[in-house]
Every structure is written in C-alpha cells, then in structure tokens.
Amino acid sequence: MRAMILAAGLGKRLRPLTDTCPKPLIKVAGRSLIDYSFDLLRGAGITDAVVNCHYLADQIETHVRALSDLNVTLSDERGALLETGGGVLKALPILGDAPFAVLNSDVIIRGGENRSLADLMDHWNPASMDALLLLQPLETAVGYQGQGDYHIEGDGALRRKLPSESSPYLFSGIQILNPSLFEGLDAGAFSLNKIYDIAEKKGRLFGAVHAGQWLHVGTEDALRAAEEKINLS
Image (spheres, rainbow, N blue to C red):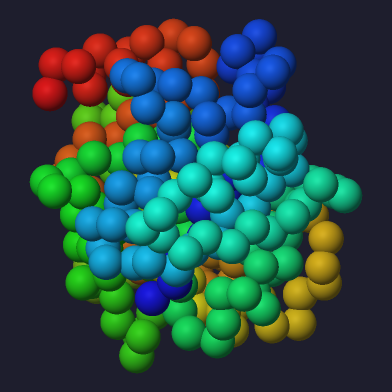
C-alpha cells in the first residue's frame, strides 16, 4: 500500500510560529510534526509516499529530500491550495489504482511500536469498504474541543453525526481510501468530507477505534499539551 501525507495547509492558528515555518515542520518535543507521520508509515511497512506542499513549500521539499529510508514524491500545489480532497485527487496518478492511506500531518498519533496505521490496515476489507477511518474516542483526545464526528453502527459502518448531536468519536486524520471514490469529480479545491459522504451513501464507510494517543497541534496551547504528553510517556 502507498500513502499520502497532507502537508499543504497554512497553519494560521499557529501564527506567529508559522510565519516563517510551515506547520508540518513545527517542532513538537524536539521533532517536526510530519516526522511522527513518517513513523507511522515505517510502522506499517510502507516505503512509497506522496507529500503535498503549498505554503513555504521549499522547506517541505528540503525536509523530505533528506529522508533516506522512504521513497517520497512531492505533489506540488504551489499554484493553488486544493484542500484535502483536491490535493488527493491531484496526486492520484502517483498513488495508483489500488487503495491507499492518507494521513494528516497536523496531528500526532501514537500507538505501540507506531502500529496505529498498521492496525488500521489490518481492518481494511475491500469487499465491503471504500473508506476506512481511524476514530479516536473523545475522552482520550488531547487538544480537541469539538463534539465528535461519527457514530459507529452495529456492523462497524459509520454515520456522520447531525449538527444537533454529539458523538463519542472524532476522525483522527488517518484513513484508507479506494481511489474509485474520486471518479467523476472535477479537479480543484474540495474537502475529503465529500468523499466520506459518497462512501457513506453507498454503505461503504467504516471505522476502527484507535486505542493509542491522539494529540492535536492546532494552537500553541495544544502544542504545549502535546509536548507534555510525549515527554511523560
């Protein structure tokens, strides 16, 4: 399986830290944010990856070029920010025709021996799934203030919560997607939420619950909380 790491965002909520440094390269407990995502690829045995870049892209490019154990291809979005879905659609020619993993670079996900992605791959069933999301229980999430994202039905299928509801799980930022979900979509900026909704309507959106740490790094306060958790573990 190949993977894509989403690293093109502007990181506005982390300003002024991101005025001169792209968010994926912000240091958390002495390491760049994106390096925690690379750890998950290694833990899953994935060696071929795509990283998209837009804001301060030269710095992202320099960082990934220094990796010696992973084969990383850049998907250049300097011309226009495409959001999560548009970024993946643009990278499909590199990712290929088989299901692939997508990881957000603005969260830190930690499990035993970096197996969080590997465990999700073990749950993947192409016969019944077009999208499989790693979900984090709200009670164990660090740096998150929302009301959750999905309910898990009896067979493991997901239902997006209604605006008036809360739900016990949030989407962690790690997923496996079937490229067929993007068929017929126009190039340009759109969210991956569009893809999840397509899969849900088909009854092919599923979830697996993560038992490890989930640390969101969206603000300076959240960054400090993440560093505290990492340093204590």
